[in-house]
Image 1 (cartoon, rainbow, N blue to C red):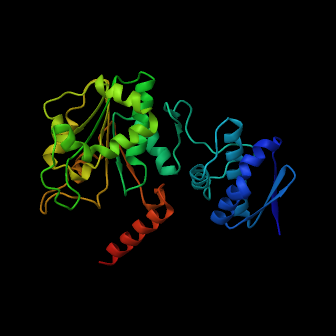
Image 2: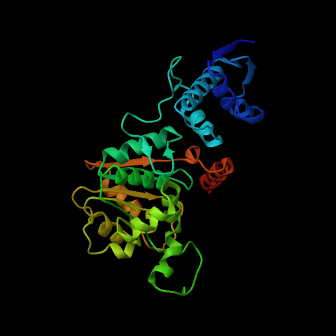
Image 3: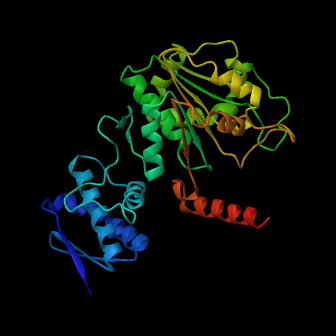
Length: 321
């Protein structure tokens, strides 16, 4: 059987690369259908040519990550496997490129990397366009990466504040009258945005930034009449904005600001007969200079692998209907 042999000079890093009980190697073997044998400070990748090349690229990338002082978790291996797909294998000694120079997402808690080609293109557009759309199913990182870019730009001084918004629309169920003041009523709808922020910033810093109004989290309806200048603005769950709400929101864009619109066309919770503002914006703004559109599929899901298979099953069922 033909094999590709890789040599790793630092035995301590090689141990981290292999993982406890070689679980990292097992993950690569399972995904690519190869065998990986350890011989001293060398790893032999055994399998067909394409799989061997992908496996070698993944192992080199993960080792380079460890050399840079970063950890290797299951999600990092998954990301490296996606980026080293067929036709995307770098030359020997070359690391799989995560970002173009200057596009690293370095938040206070952790660095953030794209894990698929679609995510790489999306992050590039978030930096390079004043208005960017991210459209696709749940779990593809649309909102997560947008918030990460917003936090990065806030910390580097590229923007003065972050504004996160989403329509306060119930997801197919009637919640009735919620108790408490206005913040307590709308916070349940905004919780996913709080979750993303808390992934990138310490809780006390999030609280202070919100108190200082350098981070705002508010329902879409609260955006009317405002001009959002020098801000990184995210509209999440945009499929649940009406056409008029979407137009209102898009025209809030002010000087020095960037705006990101994320949504999933398959999860519209608007009343029957009400057109989705996301679909209208997509139709009307295609081809407009300064506006980018990025699309995600089930292959870009970075939650539990089963989520991707669930989405694919629903898509196949809808295709038959």
